[in-house]
Length: 376
Ligand code: SF4
Ligand code: SF4
Image 1: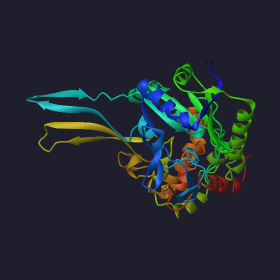
Image 2: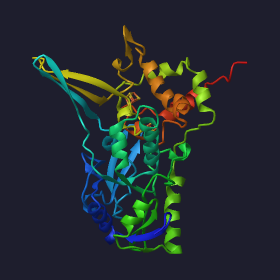
Image 3: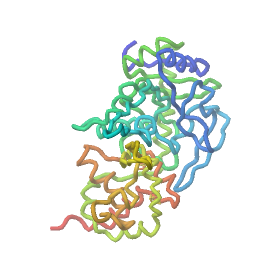
Image 4: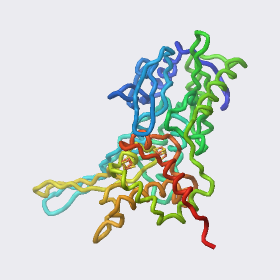
């Protein structure tokens, strides 16, 4: 089977994909119901998928509802992202043991498992591509991330419904997957039939497909998949105008608007923790009280904490306004210089999970509206 081949897998045969991946030695991770939300977790069969569950999202709002279609991927995105598996919230870097008058350093080798992600949205493929660049693209690669990445199999799922806070079309990251997957599925439910059009994205994907029941995609099935994908693009209500955005934000560094956001922002850091591209971390040491042992760990951090920007003598971003500005400007103004793309993929999580409903598309628009243009 060639890359880009399109085939059809019936709903009843989808378990074959899970079985084929397990046989190839992959641990399976995908969407499932957990704590009144759809979260990514370890799964083992299609029974674990959130059949018929839809998420309804808006600023500061997330609710699940059930429909009758039985769609396995009818939801959009939840509070978790794939970074929790590729770049876990906590990782021990090494341990130090006191051995009489000497110290022994014991490096912590990360436990690497072959992982198959099932249900990666197109915007999330873009987020993983961003992390690839940030965490492995420079002279100081994150070796644990690189190992996880090497052992990853990606089953993407094209969106056939836009969530209330999505704006991937503005960021050109969705709603259809174009790269970065081994297999890409489009779910179609019509006329009493439930099936998936599967596009092969790599040799590894072709190999897995050989292990499950499928048939060549016909014209009618391809058309139905195309129509389902078009629904998500047409539904997307939220937009971010990215034209000249880094320059506009940079020249409005001192805009009074940052103070307006600060009146609402709680600096809780939710937006950074749910964001699939935020990667800031802190390194912490923990020592036994008797001095016999210590360990050094890396933990996710957030630019919303005062301590994050602590440099000898104090924090360089003591105000809420400075911390919110840093977050938004890193995503939309500084990131293009650093990494050649925006640091936002338009997944909408930060809007949904902000307890006071702050919306970066709206805040960026207000800065743009107040822009007086370049100084002459
Ligand atoms: S900044 Fe918000 S919308 Fe953009 S990728 Fe992060 S969570 Fe998603
Ligand atoms: S913008 Fe919202 S989610 Fe982010 S720190 Fe402020 S209150 Fe929390």
